[in-house]
Length: 525
Ligand SMILES: [Zn+2]
Image (cartoon, rainbow, N blue to C red; front, side):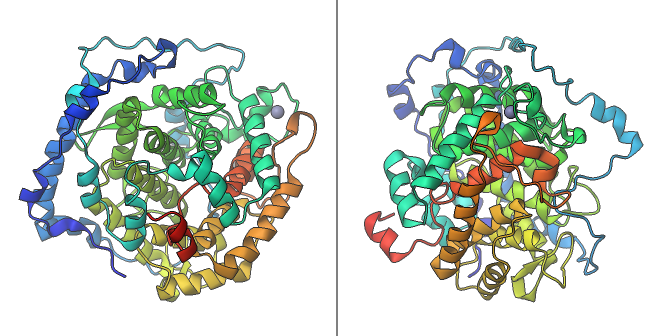
């Protein structure tokens, strides 16, 4: 199964941008409660207009450029490094070099949970109605994103791309894909724990014990204390995975304040001529950005709230800018030594979420990520290494690589997928590596069949039984045996709870990439 990137499409096709101002004008959004508006973005319609115009101009130029075969292969020029890189664990964030400390210090203010943060006063900008620039970019986005059977399945749900989280669909998928009442009850308790650990300014922190005054323990490592964007994204994602948004559900205010924190805390600027929202941070670098970009893109895809369009697209633009020459991503944007599988995984997930929300995802970026996967794969795409191919199985890298392959177009009969799934199945659930379990669960769930059933039952029942049941920790998870340098150890109880909850949402968090016959019969897509 090859992935088609419509790079050769004549540019004339792309100039016919569908515009549907009428629909948006006829149905003005209900008067928003001023408290419920994203303050930064409230001031930003002019920015949005400018961004849309620039993006469209660049897209048109980009498509012209893409037709030129010389331009599209800039990522192809990267040399393949067959040497196994140094043994760096997947969630390790690079050692701080002393020269960077000054830069890191200015990234985030020290956490003061008692302080009620005043929102930044929006810069006055020329008022402009969003409807004046309403462009339906969905067709364009479909053309630009990689076409594949799996993604077509997703894009065919063009109306509500994340409708799998609506109440009815959620129940149905929960049952069909192996969730149960106990796993749902665990998700509910987890969301309560997360909501109790949100700071007054809307952020979460890996030092969550400061928020609850020590009513539960196991914070992350001190060097992650300032990674507020990463922590906030990890706090938010389980809510969205359960169908909770700032517009719908029981946790509207929690989700709203989290999203607002991310938007306000991101650095706005321009990179490569595109407006960007940079959510990387000294203590969490591109991990933070990828996670926060997923949160913004999912929130936009689920709600189509126009106030989120600019921030979500800006976050995606930063990913496009930050891609390394080998097509992957690393701690820092465009790091010369190339990408690693772990950081790349988060960026690809964000690009996919943006694609599902019909945001702009340049085909050359997707193409680049596929070249990176080629670089780190072995055994015909069944195994994935960290910065190069690995001869032994590295479970989390392999799970991430396979999920990225599924998202970028390999179908379930591809030999790499078949063999890779067999490897994961053989590994089974790893109780000391929830980061691997998180990715493996998604790969196996999309793949389905006996491998998924077996893996799911073990993982689900273990998580349900290991959730904290009492006291301040009720509803959360802590994995004391977590291997060092995997997310849960660095991110503490918050990260563990986030991963565990998202695993228990795997039944409905995303539509299955490879719908089986039964699902198709019931819900023709
Ligand atoms: Zn606590």
